[in-house]
Picture 1 (tube, rainbow, N blue to C red):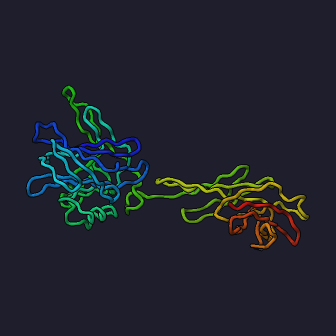
Picture 2: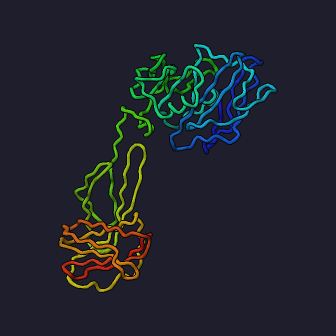
Picture 3: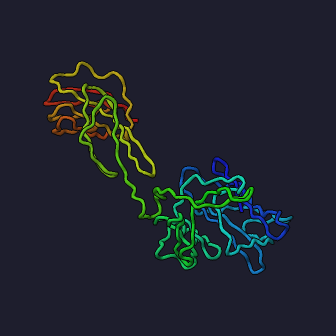
Length: 353
């Protein structure tokens, strides 16, 4: 059985080779709508094949829990998803399955990650597919699971993983086809696997996922930075007053995400600012503005809309380098006025997008 994947992850058809009709005709399943295995994302794939009492064969493919409707052709016959084909596809105890391995003459190796692998006794139903997609408990498997590899333990010295289930100890491995002794021959040789975090939607214990925060800014210095994936803090200092942004990046083995926050720094002064900032600053941070203070003191921050109406205000005693967060509200242009000891030290226009 084989299928061809396009670079986009699209699968237009998959095929089984017959062992009864001169070994040449193929049972070809073609999808009514191309099935797509999404690149750079977790996908759940189920291949089902079964025989009926008349020794007829059929196969189904589920992607992410959804049955892919198909038609098939074989040796002059044809049918659709639920129809049976007159083909004898024998599987013996000595056979083995290769996933994403290509042909022996031109092997194509899997460029991806496998979280778990399982073999069921009998054709899986939609309910079975849903159960498998949600994740199975290796210590309490459904009765009809023959072999289940969760890859939560290390491979053995020969790079094989042992299965759980009815056929406990059944072997699976990542392999490479290496040249055999005879001309044109190849040998499937187990390879030392690489370990990384698996699908975040399936529980696991073998690989610890640690999320670390990283702050960055231009012309600023960070000190006293601490944090986890849920909370943290840092102290940021600038040598000169002005408008700045800071970026927070959270990263772990599953990926990363970044968010940029606006900060305008208020220098310590005792008079009215020379002028209101003429440029509109565009800050889009879920409606939140951060004001950082260069000097300690008690500050009052007032936010006005373009009609001159006071929409928010806040007063707090802050230390040098600390900030105050202000919720701006609806999308609009605002004037933010900062006062210290009753005197205006800074005013700025802010566009909340």
